[in-house]
Image (cartoon, rainbow, N blue to C red; front, side):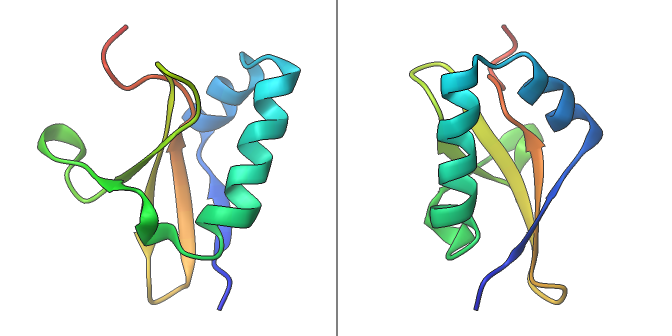
Length: 84
């Protein structure tokens, strides 16, 4: 079953700052990987516990949370989450 993808306000701001090539890569990851099986990402700890991370570039990550009841994935960030 495919999950619905929702993008938070912060993630929208992150996406606007991405180069067109990275926006295409992000879209591909969202539709072919995360929507199909959001649990394939790395489970995060600390401040971001409960969220999952997927590599976008060497530095940037897609950070999302999952609502299984609604079959929805909330994209929280689309850039680095390392404090840079």
